[in-house]
Image: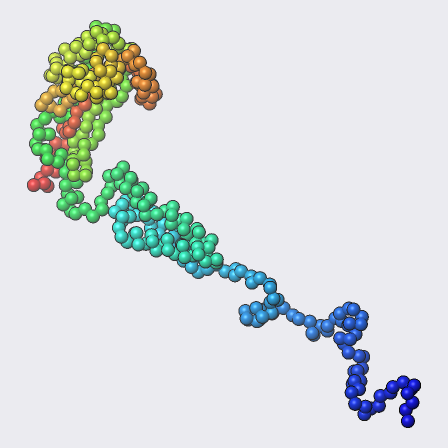
Length: 381
């Protein structure tokens, strides 16, 4: 019989009694009781992905929220774009070096340029290939078909080395020794280069001597004689040359309308004795040149106010031209002519103002080339 005041007791077969705890008690209950975590055994500690783990295993082992590391290997597309840009640039440099100007303006080069640009832009759109794509795009924009083609055209124009797609007939006429649409026999019967050189030296020597004796003018050679090949009209050079004699200039000014006119008339009287015709004053309104052009070219509308005078003669039917020019800075009211003459004098060393004498000959054939000229003409109908 159980008394009411006795404490309750459980028996082994009592219904609803909790199970007996395991030895040492429940693990969770101990942690809650002590307030500290019980360290796990080394065998239970989580380990990082090993070198043998697959990418999928490493992803599963990564903690939630941890950023995915960027790949360290460059994109193949970036390398392809860079190699294509470099190869295309090398190709254009080679074409520039050999003077193949026409190749730059063909459809093939344009298509290749677009392909390189496409690869560079595609690589630029990817994270892994962005750097290489930017380099490839820079190369493609700097060394492009337009720029390299323009450089090639300038080089060809300067050197005259363009071949392009010329036919054998075009190449033949490019070496024509005469001048297009001109009778080549005229150059065999006219004054030779050597004859004009001798005439120029004799004429100017007499002119200088007469002007020195009459007016006390002193002289200096301001430019040496030169010869330059004439173009033949077929894209090449002929055997004819343009001859420019030594240029002689006075070391003192020649100024004043009356004095300048007297000097020019003295020159005319001397050169006519050497077979030259009477002189024409290009700067004079009566020469037939437009008055506005005269004022612009010579610094004034009339000879009395002009800075520059230009008188001319020839020895027709021969090709020699005789020039006598006077620069008189006393008539330069704006200072523009003085500035221009100072620049010229600094470059060439000739006097700022005074009288200058020059002889020019066009389409001159040297006596040394007569046989070669005649032989070369036999190749042409």
